[in-house]
Length: 461
Ligand code: BES
Ligand code: MN
Ligand code: MN
Image (cartoon, rainbow, N blue to C red):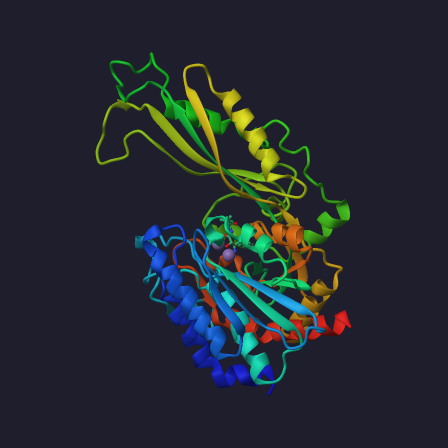
């Protein structure tokens, strides 16, 4: 049976299974959801087993479990390793959701005339990961599985995947494969299919600025003792110059500049600055001088404050000169920057910025390396042919601004290339209130994936 027909016949069930998965609040960052993480892994184990996956195992880690499963039809055939994550971001701020984050609903909107699923994880990454399980079901039931397949679905992607590195190092033999297939990125538009050709890396820091040894009366001491919030604001403000360049010494030293041809090509991708501004309700964009919005959001490194706090933030007013101020600051990295090196450069720079009136502590959080996924390998060509088969158009390669730190590790440890077949849209509000995933996108993903297996095998021969 053809994949389109199979989807039509099983459409409601494919949808209901995803909705059930979305109802489990698998928030990896929140320890209150520890049991939900296991429940999600168990749900997925049952779904994989009932469609014929073998050796399905919930592998415990010091954090949340990793789900593994496989179907080896012939050791001589190529093996595809599917990676995805079942954990989701915290849903806050809750009051901005139009419906419960874990009570999925289907709504029709202008952007998604066929309807979209609204729920935390709908796109990132439960919806996109589950497409692979349903594509596998089709291939199993219709004698259409052309490659061996291994599934590795983790529960800690949104918190830095710290237990996945050791897992892949300890399971090199079990994870042996010819290609890694991931749907955890986006495409340009439903009528402009694209394949992600690179990801940014990440360097995440927390800083603490301490002034006096206790909170002070801002009348008695104000003006005579440094206020750590004032100081921290100034330090942060100085991290960009007037051209939007990052001022951390040595920050750009390893940045791989694109050739004129590469820049021309990437800026030919369909993009409307007017629509971009309208969608975000901003009067103007901002960024590094000399680069377009597309470039700023994908091939250039960045520095952003993700949170900042200190002093009095309760109701009314309190005249306090606080003892401490804090900020979380992250940097997106591009090839060939290294998160370890940037951690060092940032720490040194930030400590030097502080005047003698305060003390500064810089603590690194998780990091990840940037990657390029080449567009001339057979895995990319197989993916391109798959999109062409179902979208009727050749996909465009497009670099993504987000990070999936494990991709660089896969390459380093397993020596295998990754292909990033994203089916979401940038407007799906991942990590935001009202995250959603178009029904068109969900079913198109399920339809496209089996072609990848077919063409990958053909091109491998
Ligand atoms: N799926 C995203 C990454 C992504 C989103 C890549 C859109 C390309 C386009 C992933 O789940 C994610 O959110 N990653 C984190 C990194 C992690 C270390 C917390 C990120 O990019 O902030
Ligand atoms: Mn994701
Ligand atoms: Mn995410």
